Image (cartoon, rainbow, N blue to C red; front, side):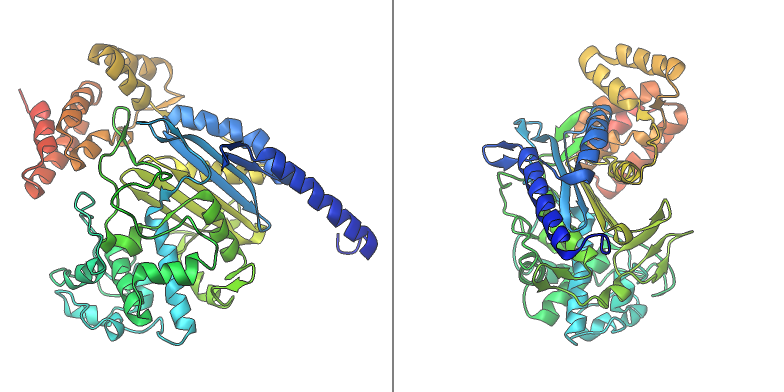
Amino acid sequence: MDNIFNKKLYFKFFLMLLFSLSLTSCNAQKKNGGVKKEIVVGEVGNKLEIELTPHLKEVIKNYDLPGLTIGIVKNNQLVYAKAFGEQSVNNNKPMTLQSVFHMASVSKLFVATAIMQLREQGKLRLDDPVVKHLPYFQLNDERYKNITIQQMLSHVSGMPDTDNYEWEKPRYDDKALEDYVKGITGLSLNSKPGEKYAYSNIAYEVLGDLIAKVSGMSFEDYQRTKILEPLNMSNSTFLKDENLPNNWASPHMRFSYNKTWKTYPYNRKHAPSSTLHSNILDMANWAKVNLNKGIFQRNTILQPQSYDLLWKHWTTRGEDRYLGLSWFIGEFERKTLYSHSGGDLGFTTNFVIVPEDNLGVIVLCNVSDAPVSYITGDILKILLNKELTSRKISAFIPVSKSYKKEGLEAAVELWNELLNTSAEQYNFDPNTFAAVFYAMFLDDAEEAKSLSILAKAIFPEEVHNVVVSEATNYQKAFPNNRAAKAILEVFKKE
């Protein structure tokens, strides 16, 4: 276009294009009481409306997802955004583009950005030992003194990972994060700092506390004033009130049906690793600023050269997969992707950008183990004009529904029927059956017993042994867990 039009023709063309896009956008933003349900803009948006929307509806049906929101940014514009399903199956409140999700580990990208901001200000270096800025950081392993900020960001610190977030007894006070970091002195390293990749949420809690101490403000206040507000992410926060706000999605567990979790995945001592809350509209701005290497409208949150470090291959994670400073780096159809996904009890999220195509994809779902990576891949295939391939559906979904409605005998009959007649359409892998473990984690004894009866009836003995082993180990760690006891009662040898 640069050399085709003279200035007058180009200006006329530009005005016509703006007018056309504004009409498309206005016509496509369906509202319910002023709340947006969708945005479809321009050629890319229309392509996705035609090819992606019906596909997503099929995915939601096949995977029995309670709610889903999708956002696609192209050339610095949110060209497609859709909200499907419900914020909560308990009250049937519809999902909207404003619906706020627990983002889980996508939070870590914001930690890395904060660290790079402080680095640009000369307040720290990536090769600084963590103890230089956080003297009370200590582990039961002398090697902790050598752990650097960069090693924590790139998951090569040797730090262990969290085994209990204590979502069921959250802290909301200002001292929660500092107390958590001071309380890990009994932990030991799993490997020498810098030696190998090992994902650690604990390392990010330490980094969050370091941000607070270096900046002189709480971690959440730093994120709000230095990152979220400059990006107009007005619906985003690392803080949560004790009561669930009205427009926030509820967490759902994959039991034998979608079940709202009575607890919520929030604990202020895990804010840096996990507690960003955001929606599609705000996360679109996050995509824009990173695609523009730190620049959003008139605000600059990072200098472009900082991305040379953020996206550097600091850690190798197998063939053609790397880790930068929090960012995961991979390839899809010969395109370089920069991403981070998130998954906590009740939520699954994915955030991907493709700088060479000026493209961002955000997928948010309010249920555990949602197929967000598959959905992201399907979106990229459509945009790259690649054919979508069919994917097998977990047979456990229709079978568990049958179990609830018609009883065990009907469920077993359906399982065997699908196994014999529809093996090309359904997945019978026991790994798709995680519901019994969710019930155990949440100590839902009634659900654990019910699901164990179904699992015992449809899965072979080797699966029984795995379930028994996990339940036994869990009961040893948490002797008062009633669900583990119920599972073992069902699977005990006659």
